[in-house]
Length: 304
Image (cartoon, rainbow, N blue to C red; front, side):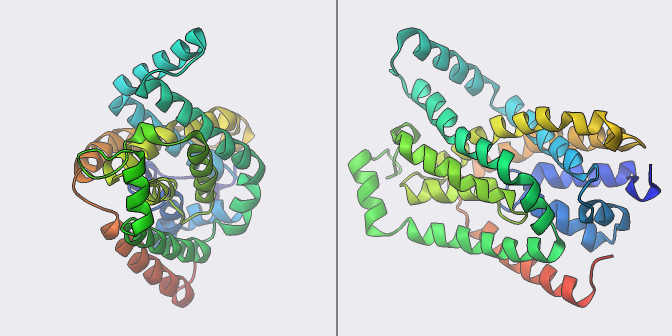
């Protein structure tokens, strides 16, 4: 294998830690895994990103699988209830409880992102998984987060929440989402195929626009992220076991995935507590500031 493809275990751990944080914070993990190697001047990883056929995509998928495992560990009780509720609806042929409805909301929202991911992932990665493009999209992501927080205070959103039934926090309950709303949210999260656009950020923003509070919007985004990430891991596993995985990539991918999984558990615990009272503004400001910095850095210093 070309030595330029080799990744050190230190690099794998650092990228795994970054993934475990940025996958769940609404700041785009894919964007950060593109930008940080440029910032750190990791020539070998930047070389991965610039080649149409390399182990990079499989490595990134393994990182996401690590994050999904962390989410499963944290939400395992919820997932047991969702799975049991799903099979109960098949048996009874009707939806009766909020958990059963949540199961179908997740299924309906996952279908469009799965289809679009299969069709668009490779061409979008080839076109836009570059440092400058990722930095620009990161700024756009920040503007989206700030815009969602501003829009949620509009009269039509408050009226929507009132019409659907307010909870004590003055917002809609998660199980009041309509199936067509879940389909739209599922389609919208496909924007995260662009490095710099956050899957969780898109889902949280859409949830706020539809009258959810920050806590329910965050919970829905975390639950919604798990199925497509695990499915992508299964589909791309062959890249790691095949020729592209030769030369030490597999070991680095496993180490990075473990680091991402452990970090994700602590990250989601923090965020679920934070979103009880916090909002998306700090993340939006961060994306804009860091994105502008990386635009300037990339233009002035250039890729390694």
